[in-house]
Image 1 (cartoon, rainbow, N blue to C red):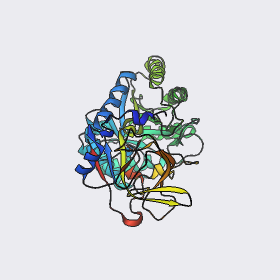
Image 2: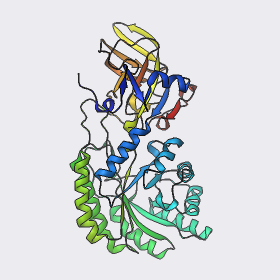
Image 3: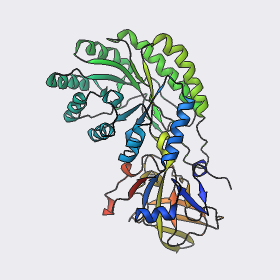
Image 4: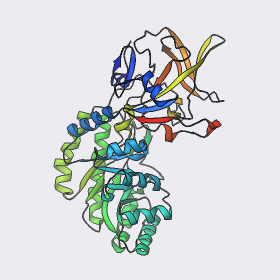
Length: 408
């Protein structure tokens, strides 16, 4: 039986999964209860090191806080990456509290409130403009505070990216300014008291095809170059987004990061060096940095057979890890990598469905999966749980307590 690459990244000792060097059952004792999320700091550091070694030295690396805003994770990453991207006032506070410099922090996302814009202007972070009206509101906030706001324009590109788990650009979008309308916005920015820095383009997320990512980066740079004639000042900031995917499902192949790095290196030496010499190019990643470093563990509470089908009932569920249940955008539900953490090397002996403790048939964490005879008290582990887990889930449903999160 082949081993999923997500599981291969973790060590196993005496038949037990290790998280941060700690056996999963010992970690459960330290945490004090199940379910819980655990994030392995060494795996995060290894991923950052791999990115540093593979991407061009001239490219900055930013972390998208939305992927995992746990304070300990943010504080750890503050010393490893070059910047943070935030999408709310709360994330902004977390980023600055972690020690990230304001001029290395960007604030993106539609629907920023007046209070959020005032906070962003006051702290001096880069506000990524999502519309003409938002640009005017930022200018008004700057006038009110007597501060010249730092701004960039988020572009909704005139191309789409195939193979992305979620399309974030191309066609009608609530994200960014349509590429054909950017010249008009840039003209108005030049007349306002705003410090224009550059652009942000993010066309799609969760892509495992290096060729598609490379083509998206090439088209993004071509689009930016075509817009420079309208810019009120040279482009000094260019966020190319990321979209680097991780393999969640059985047939997924890991992203060939080396090819992404080679392609980006060529673009930096040709297009950026000649056409955008003052631009600091940023790759912004969230899932790719932390997704494979986290697990979600829950304890088996019950076993039952219903008309020939065996159900393993755990004390966790979709209220903590919604994505694994298939309710975060999957058209066809597929299983995340799953294992019995305290019997990692046991041979699969039966096919079971792992379900949570909620009163809905949607609370399904693993359907018809082969596991080594899971029994009451065992720890069932879902891998690829380091990103878009707890904070992307309906935690208030049925009123269960929140799970513990730990960085080990």
